[in-house]
Length: 567
Picture (cartoon, rainbow, N blue to C red):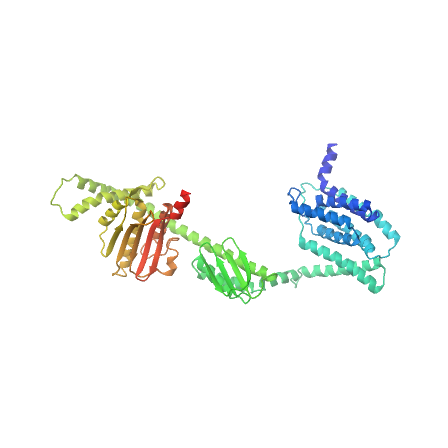
């Protein structure tokens, strides 16, 4: 008993299919249109809902689809006639012809089902619909032997580890339905034109369609000296908008010429607009965006993992041209992804060199700190001498501060994860800044109310880096003057550093805070590092003005982050 239950479970899907076909056959051949026939057709449609290959068995059917199927079923059974049956058989044949078969057993079952459905369509439905006279023996033979075919489905042996793939290829399904309709139409046309019997006309049409399919199959298959229509079709898809080889060569050249991913993307989008069937394009990536050409009402949007592009043309881009357009954009995305990886690898190589340099410098700082400790201890132990020079008193005041800052730097190099950000009063920090910076043509301005705290390490790093950049610019522009300002604004401390030198080049303006830049006087990571440090402290370092005669940097608290954290 258990073995019988196991067999039923293994062949459950095929048993439902066989019962569905049997109910269809009985509904057609047992007084079609009678109450009994309609009842059998209702059972057939219910079994079809269980067997159908469109929705999975574990998928929850939406109530809208359920109501629609019930309404169509009631309408079909109520007004059932040969024309509706003809359409249903064509649809059912398309479903079976479009099923994806990965096992030999499934292919055998599908062939049997197609033979059954086509026989029902040609011998029973078409004959009754067009009132065609055929031999009673032929009709009786089909009505007697057709029910045997669904039983053969159950007898097909089950293969081990077989999993049914319940999917429908709608292209194959549509092609199968059209071929069956063509067979019926061709048979009727040949019968009425040549005044031959229906069965003879049907056989002639079958032979003609078979020869046609054989020729198409032969043309689609590559042979010696002939690449086949499939390769010609693929080649036409690839080259319909522009020769693919030429396009790949252009992109490869741009990949070598452009240094940054954004520059490459902008240049390659400009090449897209140069295509004859494109009038304009708009694109946007996480780091850049832009527009080329003229924008029309015919828009085609294509999204990738890295950017979004809208392509405009004089007419709607569809069909094979849309596939070609999507292929070109996918190629751009692959090259752009490679450019991003190249940039990331360059950054990692650059930072690795900096870290290795830092490891060597750590030991030198440690030795220097030991010497400073010795000097500081000597100066602090000396008796107070009123007649000491001003420079000597300044040295004694600054040496402990310098020693302390070197100690903090060494601690951060040796154990960066254990160091914490200290805070001081802004006014105290401002006084120390003025006392240790004696630079010509630097104007210090302060307008602070209250006693706010600031992260001392962040402000020290920012001001020293920006002042060092001004010293570097003075080597080329000796007449530069600068202004350092510290003031309150909206419960936040804002530090600005401005100079009257030349503007920062455009190619560096958008990358100095985001990437390491090429530098002839250093490592090129100063602004990049302090921008990251500012972000980690909920501050923003930005370039507020970049023009000849006024270049200003600003450090202020990130109010957006504060507001979101408060909420």
